[in-house]
Image 1: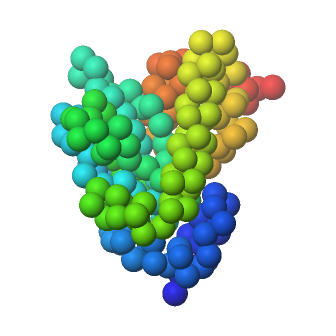
Image 2: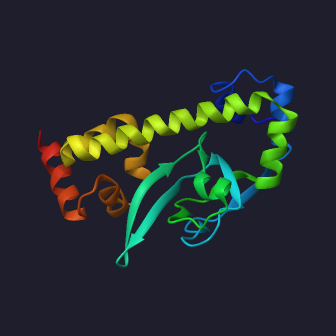
Image 3: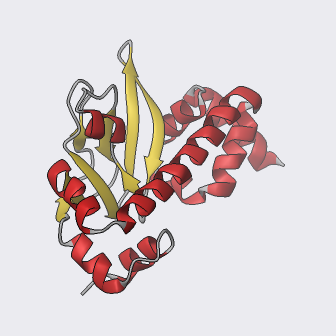
Length: 192
């Protein structure tokens, strides 16, 4: 039987039937992963794509010994280094669990079989990629046009749960600021 949260997340994206979704999910493996586990390291090829049923993941880069948060994934989202997964080229980033997580993972072989067995998978994956592209484009534009305080307020408005689930120093690097600057922004907002 399919978990209703998983079913609802997938139904938001596609018109696959419940039986099709169940057959598709049979290609996925359930993994229980402890917090602070690296799922992918820079320089390695991504071997899996994940659907998060519980938990929070972080995609980050390392530069000069400092890690820079680039994206956070939570329940109902697909996560992974899709570029590395498809191209079979080493990834430039890391993916780690920030919380104890329950993931559905699919390897490349099973992923490609899904396209042959379920033609609707093309539309499903396209919609996920379009949504991710729009999200990343907004993030990129915000880094150029918005002040650090505007970026924080946008994160707080659109993803309030991240503020409590993600360490503040990781939120700071995600916003492109230092932890001290983030603390000042939060204090300024709290005083208003």
